[in-house]
Image (tube, rainbow, N blue to C red; front, top):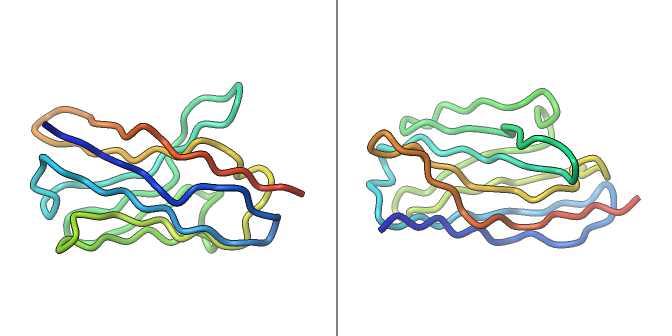
Length: 115
């Protein structure tokens, strides 16, 4: 079955960096558009960044210039490098894949940025 497993979250001071990973299994990763979403307490889940099978990337305005999404098809893994983190980046970050007409989600990884 399809599994998406996030890792790399944690507690970091404002201005710091974290690198999130999403390991995928059960899909043909190389042909799948992958996305990072986040959900802060009391807020709706929002798209942070996406990367197509061809490597085309898109970012939310809040992530532009600070976050970098990437993928390693040989490892079936997607990454999110987050720099210059702000307290408002505090959220649970989720990996998402659209595969065979269905959306799949990971369990999420908590990112907490202290001021």
